[in-house]
Image 1 (cartoon, rainbow, N blue to C red):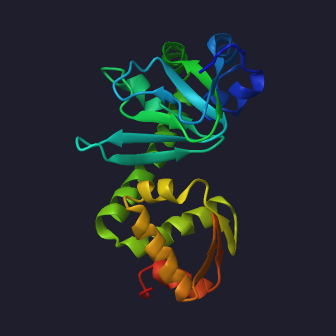
Image 2: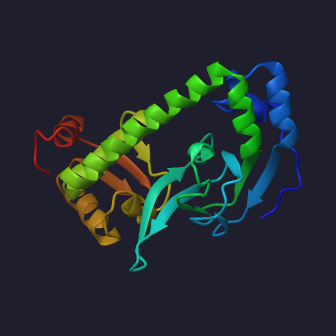
Length: 233
């Protein structure tokens, strides 16, 4: 892991929280920020480590995950370029990272000093409200995720995940998984073989076509019916 470069003003301006700060506060944030480069498979932080920094992913891909006592891994989130993370740790009584973070690809991050960020937020109400709005969106997504994992069968989880990708990628028929099928399975709390079986069933039913990470929706009507619980795959 290296952190020898300094970020540009653009990095601060693109951050969803800091973009709301006035000029003088943004300059203060930039003065303490730094670029962090991390190799594939390298750990950025472990669960329980002191949370001294928050991050913006500029390039690459990372996963946030926790380990069960039996060693099983539960992926909490997959982070793509433009993702920000660890902001909630700024408000914890004991400021420690609640998850592990590992690079799935060589990644380039902008790291912001957490103490500086807290000081900035104390001085700017608009930035605080923007942060609360972001936390509210994330909470709503987490509730949706919990509902999916607890109430939906494997097929519904997979189809609804593809539906989310469809919206995120602004796609109609052609989708691309952002990471390996193994990590997609982990995100959906499925075994890799279960994910493969669901893909095979949907493909045999003429709903989708799978080629590596590329997925083509062949029958949009049936795909949407499955997503909304109106059909059985």
